[in-house]
Length: 622
Image (cartoon, rainbow, N blue to C red):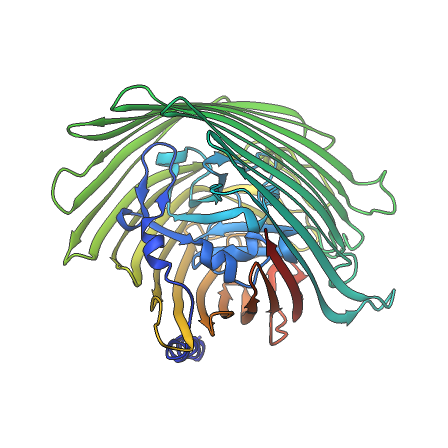
């Protein structure tokens, strides 16, 4: 670790004298963080929030949302297949079921299992930015935002046009059985229509490949639509819909080594309708309905589909009523939410549960340089009863661009249907599980200017009734149990700098980022010596990320990234990626190199990740 930090710092600073990217930090500070009720620009937030902005999305060497998130410090991306085939996302040492995922503020997480929450119908090309909120977000979103939330915000349509992105890649290694070279390809297209009173975005994509080792081939298709229709002078109707069909070989994904011949197909459909209306000069209202359907079909041995075949159909129907009130003493947010979760499964049975919530929030900014947000989410669940999640955050600006901040919150994570009822040869559920509950406190300092953004903070989180899958010996099946407490202390430092446009130079601009997170999770009740834990001892301990981007000669751009990760139960590793692109009049050519130094590493379970992978792509906009 001591050798890695100066190496990555040198990587960023040495490139700082050479070149970079367009001036986007000012835009970053002006990004409105889209919470359901009260919205604040990034520069005024009192929370540890980081934005993956549109320039980073364009320049980072990634082709999936999960790969984009891997460059955010504190976010633990545990892929079992590259390109977004299957990935678990957690924040600051939590598990993958403790992070809430949203699309434009609509919750898309899966009550069956968090393994499916990144099966999203959105292409990277259709994303404007991604908001990563670290720390308890239950005051805003209710249950299952125990360690944070990730909100994916799609692009706003401003003009009519068509764009396409085609790419192909390979490791240049051969399958020892078939003799074929491992390779993949992708085709994506997006059409936009900007009319006087409405706007529409439609995208479709196909990606496929024969994998990177035995039985890891994949094939997925996705479509997505978003439409906005103006109604009168102030009102707007929003319609969103999407579908993804994702099939992949799942060798070693969940039950290694016995699942060498496993195959999985996950099909996800989402739909949402919202209506924004300004009832009075001080009262705005937004009702919203949303629906998510997920079909998870898993074959333990694909050659014998009649054995160990799990078929799950999950449905989630949600209704929201969000209000905001502008008053002389500050801004208020108030709303109601109801959600019904149903599953029909060959393994888990027929289950359903209901959820209802009422939430309120108050923003106070009448004292110069002081901003306070306080609120609570009161939740009722048909299986577990009532629970309240109060929280507060406060920030004080000093010396213009500096801010000191603190936030305190609580949270809850409901057991998934898999946690409760699963039956299999290697995993057994536990219907006596209780929800996880957390308390969280964080404090730190921020600096925001046109060219430089800095965040330094320390946090403490305590989770009671922590759910972990454990077993007494290696031959036993995994089973989830509640343990007394999981206490995590951590601190983080992140910075983003850009030079802006450089005049009279071959180099147009520079941007680089550097971020470090340290985590120290501890189980308060000592587990039996023979007890084997799946999640409690597999979180990150040290994570360091560095990114450099350079634009030069007005047509070239180079991005180099490095990620250092050290887990509690696994050796440390460093992965470096790069993208080089050449801009034409209405198109661009790009080349990506992932895992440049061919490092052997594992992110989840016993699944080795691919070595070096080269990709060549072409983008065009008309």
